[in-house]
Image 1 (cartoon, rainbow, N blue to C red):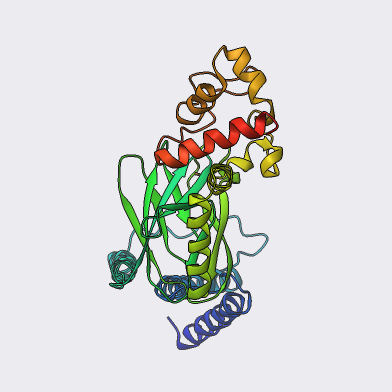
Image 2: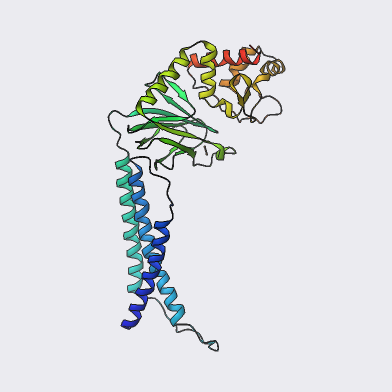
Length: 336
Ligand code: CUA
């Protein structure tokens, strides 16, 4: 190969690499960084992007150079020269990708292990995934539950993931970390939020018809605000049964599927809970028993006109919260 050709190839490669780098750097591809763990995840992203830009420049340079230099004349219908194999080239294009892929996996492994370290004062949150809702419970905060993930800023958090039906996946883009919730397995995820704000919680595993709707929010707050919220929620759970039941209703995301005037809920996926007395009559069961059964074993009786097997069993609700919820539903549906 002539020296002039090599200079031309390199020049074309540099131009392509520069263009690709500008596109990679100037467009904000990644969401804002809101956790300590995001740094490592971003490092893996940029490492892979740099490798991709280098390979893209090399391939692009060879293609453009070939198109320009080896173009056949319009009247040239002859076959190209017969070429078979090139051992040196084959060794190079096998070895280089093997080294690059190994490097990516080593860096990813190191980052994942690093990101799995939780501080000793970590906040534990149990995350329950079901079709199609997230529930978060705080064992050290009186077992209070919430449909929204609230976290204090600057403190390491361990999320213990659990799935009740099929595989779901927990992801907050701004936190970077992602983990599957698998039925029958205990998986966990460490997150240390660094910025106050509200971020989307997204299910990233296709889990059924409502997959795209399986979203909620993660709210990162000042530690004092978090403590105040936890205290207030605990008090609501301990308060008069009506208030406690309403708190359970709200914190378990019932409102996303059901209508209930007393809770200001307007969901349309499941039966209208203001009509519970009518439904109980149709099912031929006493109202309170009917309501309780419908919460812990929703498929025992499905109101005609509504799809079967859509409501997940809320059988993990603590007994006192279940009783408060039943009482609240019975009273409010009777207009009390
Ligand atoms: Cu749960 Cu997708």
